[in-house]
View 1 (tube, each protein chain N blue to C red):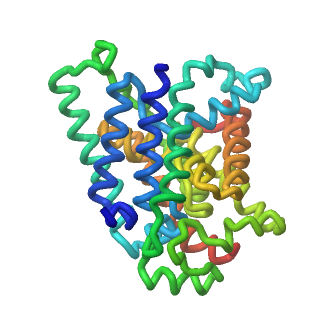
View 2 (view 1 turned 90 degrees about the horizontal axis):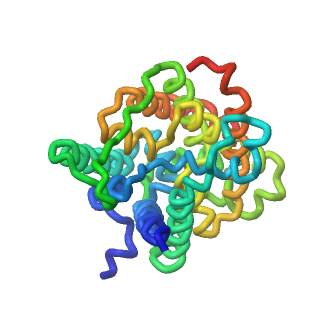
Length: 137
Length: 185
């Protein structure tokens, strides 16, 4: 089954995010208080790994597992949507100490109350879909 | 192998997370968790009302598989790899939290004050969780990504839009953590 490799990658992701405590409300709060390097270290090393990996991919024009040359799309240019959307996201991130990935991971970990966060997130996503045309991008 | 139960270091964790992103790229996909929220809305039929959600969600099954795997990972890590020394945050942070009535971690990932099953009895606690989710869902779609899509994937690809998004994430997070949270909780 071709989906198994994605479940496996997800499993690794879930484990590392939980064991590094990046899913922990406490760690997010600590991060925004600048009282530990831990979370910043995680993000910096992940980005460093990613930058090196992507530079190698581009330099050697590497192909993906199906033989297709790898092309990583650029993000759409803009400013308002990124700043405004980012700030709104950040408010939520600090309030409930989680973001989309951790929301699912925490539910899997048994934190039933996070289902309410998921519900809110689905509602928020739906709201964006409705209001999208009226928002500055 | 005791160390596997302790908090994993930032340099190992960050590296593995970077690898996760690269592996997904190797599989011809991308690393971005918030799009799953949009997929779930589509699966629930939102596409009939709102065009933003009318797309072929089945093409996103791979990402839902990643989510399923992640949930399993969370389950295994919490139930089989935990240790009482986990979540050893800065004692100064613990003091700050005490002032807003949030108890020390004592190995737990999430504070009981906001996440224990008792919150289902408190309208205020329920509201905090739902509104938090609303902000995350709305904000990530508006910004076109969350920490995985922008902070990890976008910055790794040296994308200026992602830098703007991440700056936004931090402005919002700092405002909430320093000014709003203490008033709400």
